[in-house]
Length: 146
Image 1: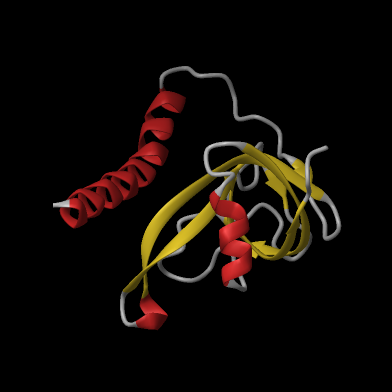
Image 2 (image 1 turned 60 degrees about the horizontal axis):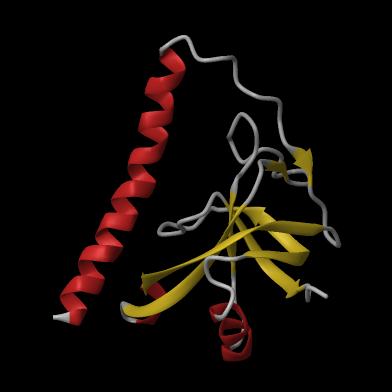
């Protein structure tokens, strides 16, 4: 029963992510204000802040095993060249945090649904099928709040 619920929840989350751009496009046609300016740039060594979200996704590289994926939702940011705006008008707003160890994943679990800040060491536009974010942060470190 729980597995079926989790599957339905993941499906609903995916559908919501896919429907949001379509809804936004419809709203722009209704006389909405012109698109906002591109976000401010973010480079290696800078801090990205936003709300941390978690989703369970199927890992295509690991025989479909369900894994946690963490994502920061933030204001639009431009990435350093050659990535630029990731084919978006204002730059990406969702940033996947790639965890390189179980320790990093465990560190993020307690912050799901809360605002966090990370120091960005490597960032790029999403390019692999199945990535749920517009940009991917492959190397990062959590900034502890005092």
